Amino acid sequence: MTPFFFESLRSPTLLLRPWWRGVLVLWAVSMVPAPLIPEQFPLLAYLSTSLLALGVLGYALERYGLRVLGLFAAALTFGVTIEWVGFTTGLPFGAFQYTAPGPSLFGVPLLVPLGWWALTMVALSVVGAAHRLWLAPLALVAWDLGLDPLMVAKGFWVFEAGGWYYGVPLSNFLGWYLSGWLLSALLMRLEPRLKRDAAPELQLVYLAQAFFMTLGLVFFGLVGAAVVTLLAMGLFLLPLLGQWRAKRLGRAS
Image (cartoon, rainbow, N blue to C red; front, side, top):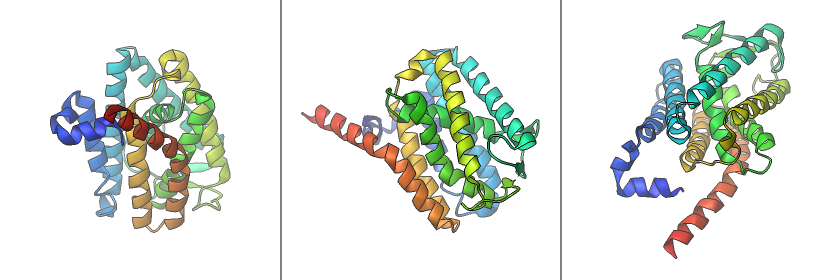
């Protein structure tokens, strides 16, 4: 685990200093009840996505300053645009329709552009600086291997032609890679330090999401998707685990 994780166990007040770390802890806590009270899944989905987006925004504000508000606005605009194009034309994800409850903008549920912002920032931090533009979208696709089957199963959207993978077609994952590539390129162009920065806290988010996503998929009966998601996200987590272990050993020596 990260040095931040072990330090926070010794000093719980560290979670609140700075504030966005506390928000990320609340995000993790907010995912716990979802499988236990499935009737509240829509509310919990909006809550957890909003907390994650806020926590990532807080980290970015501390690291890069107020210019991050421009990145945040660009990511939200991109998310709304690519999703609107998606459900009106079928490109690049395949023909689908939103059936999600809750607030929306131009027919796009608000949790979706918030997710594009948060997930892409996390994915950029998970992969190494070398070939980041090409690898970060793959980290996003690994995440989506669990996310899309879950959201289809919970009635947030439906693909018109169905799909062999829990109602999700292959075109969706190709569309995720393309969209992730475009958004990653945009964010790194607006803030060049994203080409090399790696935040341990955001890496820990990816680890926590792999755990909670896998567990949630099992609870909701999507066992195959759980296995696929764990294996796919694990490909990005294994190098991180090695890095975290090396840092711990380095501090101990």
